[in-house]
Length: 501
Image (cartoon, rainbow, N blue to C red; front, top):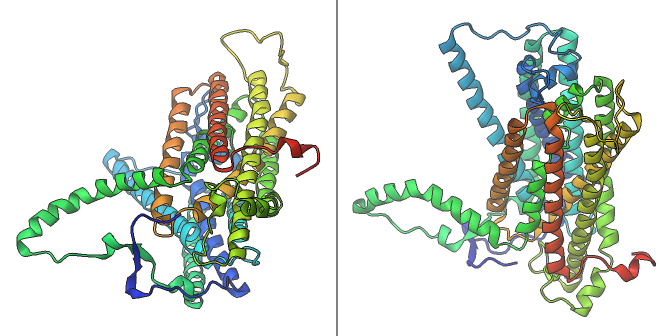
């Protein structure tokens, strides 16, 4: 896909150096930098909500009391470990400062993640088949993120539980950031200094590179225009986002962030309120994390396997509108590289559909189990699905947690394939802008999910949130399936199912 605007690189360099791919030392430094960054981000996500540990209201699914539960206490037995100032004005100022720094932290973390995933990784990735090609780099980077997501909060909770002090936990998080940031920056700088292709000036649209001289009489007009530039650029970003060929997969992935059948605070609090023990939840969450991490091992192999028909499709030219005919990153690639790129796109499309289908099929039993298990205080249990009055049904609990774990495998396979599609089928001059708008769309669905949880706060209402989550997954599947069919002309080779792919 090419940009409508002619592009020129800053500094006048038009031909970037060849792309040999990363060396093992460069890859190691990249992984180290990403590991420390995600470790801090995941730890902060947990530590930031821990002081709210006494805010959970029995019978509600608000997640304020989840942090202490992971550390081994309940709101009813936990002591007041974090004292707030008595003066209301001072309390408000302190809270405002904390929120402001929290916003800065999240913006910085998002900016760093976008720069790494949508710029650095795509730029330094080797050609298809290289040990550090884009597929393998994405898988390792996501594996690092998921491992940090699992372990970092656990260590913080262990520190807080062992010291019996939230202050020590906060201090541990802050000191950890101070120690790791220099290592993160040093590792990133080593990758930058050792990669000529990364240091090559980035191309920009010609209308952005050209700057007309501004006269004194026009300064006031320029000042007014500068105030309008932000909103105008935002809407231009939206226009660019929906003009790309991959906005449908991107929106489909963003819609999954509405799903409340994930290991977020609201869901954990709900499980606790209906009678599940902390040990059961911890074990189930750990198993789910293993499934999530396994997706980073399955995805690279699945892309290669499901993309093996790409050579035939490229040679036959049955579908000239197929995105698989586009060279992903090597704009001046030889025909062999174009063929390999086409196979990769076919593999991404097919594996993404399988992952999304797995997510949908495994979510159905999860929702059914929640409807059976969930307490219903307004009406008697239906005769078709009787519930045990003296405890939770072991069978339905097994259905709930096992299918929930399998659903996490599917969603992360879909996440990885969609990420690579948006990395490679969006022009290099638009990648960062596309990623920024995509992040905004994700936040919209996260806010909608949070709003739904606020609108339906009672435990007996959570089954409706589960049903809404299933609907969001179904709509996401429909949107992605529509896009795949438009690109490939079909969804499944039904005639090949019996003989194997």
